[in-house]
Structure formats: C-alpha cells, structure tokens
Image 1 (cartoon, rainbow, N blue to C red):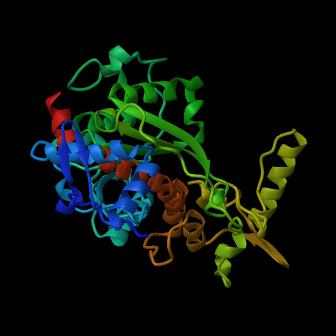
Image 2: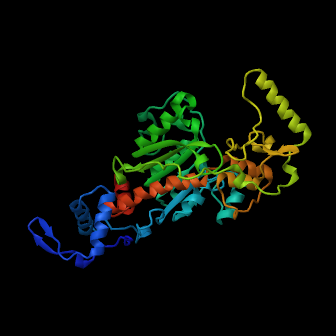
Image 3: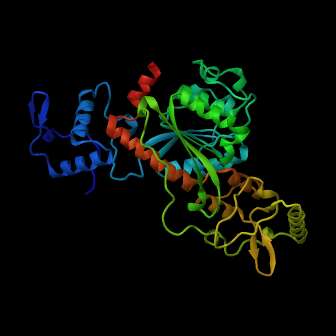
Length: 416
C-alpha cells in the first residue's frame, strides 16, 4: 500500500481522553497501515510514533510541522525530497547533477576556474561565484545541504588543537589560514547547514601522516557535527576504478548524537564495462602518434627494469579503467584504448564524461585539454547520488521524528 504524504493528522484519527491515556477508536485502515509501516521502519513502538505526532501538533506554533521549503513530503518515494543545497568547489557540477536529480534546488555555487565556470553556466544556467576566500558569508543564502569537493592541502603546522582551531566564535586562528578547508569550515560555522556533504581523494586520511584528516575531522566535530566517512570505489557505478573518501556530517542540534545514516552498498547486478561507454567511430586525432607511442613503451620498459610499476595502461574493454586524472590531457597514458592494427588511442572527451557518469545531454563547450582536466577533477554523479539517497533517508527520518527539518532548529542554533 502506498504511504500517504505526511500531513497534519486528520480529525477522525482522535478518540476519547482517559486520564493520561488516549483511546483511539475507528481508526481508518489506511492510517493503521501507514502507522504500522512507519513505526517499524523507524524502530518505534506504536505508542511512541503516535505520541511523537501529538507532541509536534501540540507545539506547532513554536515548532512547525514542516518548514516552508518542505510543506508536504511524500515519503512513499524514498529517493526524492524537496531540499536546498549550496555547491562549493563546484567544478563542473558533479554534486549538482546528482542532488538535483533527487529533488534538490541549488541556491548558491562557487568555483574559481573560468573554464569550469563556462561549463557550469552552460549546463545549469548560472555562473558560480569565484574565489571562496573573497566570499562574504552573509551573501550566501540559507541552505539545507552544503556540498563540496574541497582540495586537499597541507597544513602549515603539525597539528591544530581543538581549542586553538575552534575556540573563537568569529573564526579560526591565523595558523589555519591559507588552507581552503578552513574557508569552508567558516561558512559551515556561520551558516550552520543541517548537513555537510564533502568529497576528497582517498589518501586524505593518510595525508601528512594522518594529521590533515585529524584536523579536518576534529574541526567538523567541534563545530557540532556528527561525522561519517568512507572510501567508496566508483567501479560499482561506472567502469572506472576511482576511490574517493565521502564525508557526511549531520548537525547534532538537529539530528542528535546518532542519526541513522549508513553509506550505500554497491548496486546489485553486473558491473559496468568500459566497452559500454566507448564511441563507435572516434576521431582519428585521438590515436597516438608513432613517436608518442614509442616513447611511452620505452618509458615503461626503463621503469620495469628498475622494478617500478610506472607506465602506460592498456584498458580491458570488458572491465574497468584506471582512475581518470586531471593530467590525462598530457598523453592519456593511464587509460589507453587498444585498437586492432593501429596504435592505441586516448579516450575522447565524451567518453571521459560517460566514464564519470555525466549524461550525454550535457554539451562539451571547452577545448579537449580543458575537458580532460574538468572530468579528471570531477566527482562521479552516480556515486554522489547513491550517498545522497541515504542522506535523504535520514532527512525523512528527521521529519517523522521531529516534524521539522530546519526552520525551528535553525532558530535554536542561532540563539545558542
């Protein structure tokens, strides 16, 4: 049975009062079924579920059942929910592609590279703001989810203690300046989005002997967020071995100490294959010239003789590729497509877009060099989408638990 959209409980739901108990008679079958299904999904007894609805109905002037942005939420479809987001270090919008597909509305975007801005403008209709270091936080609209694939930079000190990095209401100590993560952390501190959804390279956790990740995690936790993180390989969604760490943070003032979040499992069924995304008749210009092909072979032979693994990579058309990098424009050596009777070739920019999970409907409006850089730096939208679905599950849980996602909680956060 399809669950109805969550609305204020209908009058026919209520029955007689008996001291501190509530006797409910003649409850319609559709409501009984909905209560049973929802309370099981959220691990609540029938009494706990019904009382939670009554409590929020009683306090509706102070704690509205739903914020303006989420007036009616149909929980029959767990994959979508009306929410707003801001897109930082946006690149070409891998986060935006994924979040919009799940009901998200982008309120703000930020990306400094002019070529990426051009692609972003073409694909989404608006030009991102530039350098994050020059943004005034008051100019950023309120949003429900802050998203961003921030760059991994070394810190100028071996470690930043919690007190020294977060002991001031108006920003961070000078030793943290110059690292773009702290620009993002300042925005999180001042805007207090209910959710922060971040992405970075796999070795973020081991960077600088683990100190970089230690500072980042401590910073987010000291800002009052519950932090989840996991390295996910995109090979389950696209034909590319691409491991990235995904970081999902929930504001404890809104979601409590233990929000029921979990990272997605790999989709069932056959894995995607490289052959599925190849163009049938690629331009001959992508075939390596004799000189470059010979150089790559000689280079690989020299390093093999030294016991190193450096060299080109001929892709298995029935499998997945190596990780596409921003340097792919140089020679394409990490992912070469074998060709019968000819030298191997690079991927075309369109094939790179497909390898990352971007739709064919998105036109490529920059040079091949810039396109390779953009796709090599991008996040994989299908993976972001899979993680975002789990975030939406927690948002839906919060609506059921508290009757509100953001507005009242945001007032409490600002007052605290």
